[in-house]
Length: 273
Image (cartoon, rainbow, N blue to C red):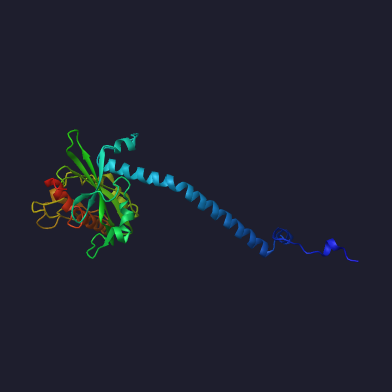
């Protein structure tokens, strides 16, 4: 009579798995699938748990770059405390006037630009950004008397390989550049990425955005166009990075022009913002 223990087939998934030969294809595939599932769960869980800290770091980095472009950053400073010197405001781009439609402290212009209800599609799009948020962030630095000392404006536009995100700081007149710096881009190291080179950035302070007739005269290129005073308005293009330089030229002209902050800056000078 046959032994019942030797003829009974394994029951249950775990028992069936253990009964598989160690080098069998089904066992190998099962192990691989289970490991993939476990790893994906760990990665997903870590991403969820780390997201709040990533958002904090993102906000801190933005504030750090605003401090840097405005000349207020020093190693070791308390970024949050130093940033308290700024007055964040929102501007309705179309009217050039301040807006309280959203919270300026938490507003994310990049997110708003992707929302059809909070942005517009651009028919004339020299900066190649496709959509523009209806509201734009501005950061005002005031002196002890309450007068505006510096104006920091966010700018972005497409270069060669990527969208460049940065800030331009203007002095109180809304015309003289205090500084320009980019905090995010994917341009080619050693070429377009030279937008981060301190020597190249050193060309910007003291340049004038607008000419006497109010036109946007500041530009990046091999030479200043005819009729433009290069000593006041010209920034040398980056050697070997023609398309990135052209992208910076386009984005600065866009954001300083009628489609960007020009109406706001005009209103601000007249006390009508």
